[in-house]
Length: 209
Image (tube, rainbow, N blue to C red; front, side, top):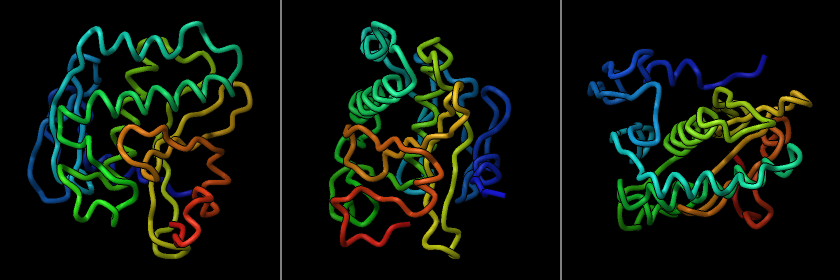
């Protein structure tokens, strides 16, 4: 049975709107559930060490809607639109939480300015963005799923991604924004392939998580 980090996120995210959740550093924080474009939670600074409640303007949210207009004709096209929309959300949100200079992976951000995000931050926030889009009726062919985690110190370092499911094929797809700098479109590929340690071809010297 494939592991996911759902148990970990259950510790992070409370089940009720406006409830208080306890995060890895034991600091209680409010987490908005369900999220809305005008009010939702994000996390950053590695494993959700910090959180913020923010919102995007109606014009900015319209920019996200525009990524899906006209409606995609098939699941493959919708996945491309999803990647573009997630990249745009990072551009919009970045200045609000000082993650606009977030670097790819973890170690590249060691000397970077601003707040940085690891794969827990990235997958948590990407799942929130996907949920906002799904709730707004922007997806025709996909549904948002729990995050998925590979590794667990058995087959490499743990690494977590957001996931969407193709409603037609029932195939789950990783939506992994951790491999690139803030605002760059995430990698979208079947979770089964991602699970086997996939990483972008340009990271030849990178030991996949």
